[in-house]
Image (cartoon, rainbow, N blue to C red):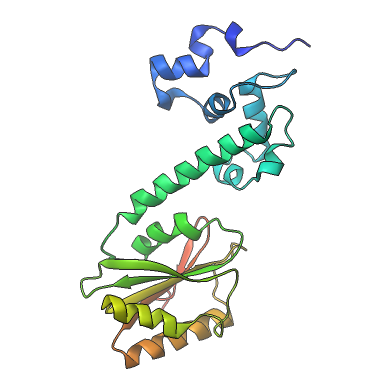
Length: 228
């Protein structure tokens, strides 16, 4: 079967031309990817190849963003350069989303914390533990990664957590970590760690305001659930 190239399509059907003359929002996800990869393979054009790649992840861009260079290169017509282009574009999108959400400067609820932390750790395949440091108006002074790659109550350095809080003159902290499994319920280790952080903070007059467990699409708040 002879491949029909994009150049032989009607002008309105060419992704680049559609963007130029009709704007970026009119393009489908497949057409945007087609612009990134520029060409397909001997059997399919760039749009058809892009559609096949998307179909492999059930048209889920978040799932696509998790594919490695090696996994993308399994598709005929996707070499290392094209795979890197796709990953780079999706990473830029993630960072833009993070920048928009990180602009929240004053924490009013657990939802505000989730908006800051979800783009940062929600889709990671390993655990990270983060701290938000707040002043007396609940404005975010700083955010800091305290642990990476799995943790327990004994591995998180609570002394380091509060050392940074004292340096910033923070009066409150909010801690959060992700569950790559997608499960929201806290483990016994999560509960024990929360208790230790709260007790340590009380001696310094620095309040633990909340502890959030973050997943890709949801979150669990110790305060909202009456556990803090």
